[in-house]
Image 1: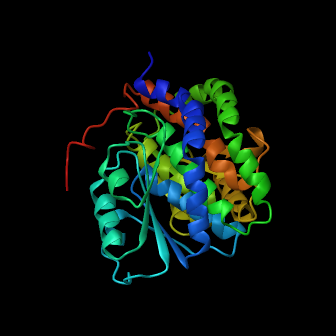
Image 2: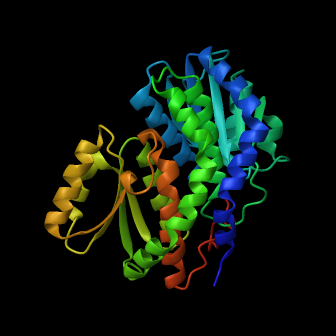
Length: 336
């Protein structure tokens, strides 16, 4: 049986290609703006904030000239340090462009005279209409709750904007690989389905997953736990920075507890390996996703690569438990 999420996963390469073609010049303009400000705010919720976490940590690991702060919608809204006319730019991310707290924050930033950018998939949404500089991801409507094509296009826009403005010494190579990402995703969608279908069947009876990642992989670990496993597969899940394994989780890691770990051989993955070794000694169920198994790209781009096998894993994990990975029980029905 195929669910709506299947079609939307397969549309990711084309959606990314269309977004690059349509929004490239606007992204270049925003990159120039970033060079002229003292601070960049990134604001989002759910899958959208996970893209903010990933690009923030990627920039912090590679570049010194961009000061980035990440907020959820209402955290930004209630931030008392905002000042009239401050030298900053605020980039708001939302699939629908109507996320209540993100939209409220955009309006607050406009009131303070902060230059606002919105990245959304709905061209007629409030966020697109009210931002000073809008970017529309070209994914057509997305209905599956996990956020596949909107996630990949949002994150690509953030990487393109911020790395073009960065002083990262390998940014030319990274941006060239980012431009080739649609082709890479196409191959991964074909090559990673079967192994992750099998992996999902092996873990279908597990109800709790811990998700670890370092650097830009933490943002994806956050998405994996919060919007993929909990919302899509209806499993309990918890995200952590890999280096924080030694606090809390080290006391709960036990035999047969599933722990998903993302490893890219980043400098910080020296600590990730310590968590892997500890878990293996305890005979925990280590589910390791290693960048070297999938692609030869700049390690800072690893969330783009890892998300495809993880989508297959969650898709089939839901299926083997009789769940539609694109459906919801409460999201969109309960407002607060």
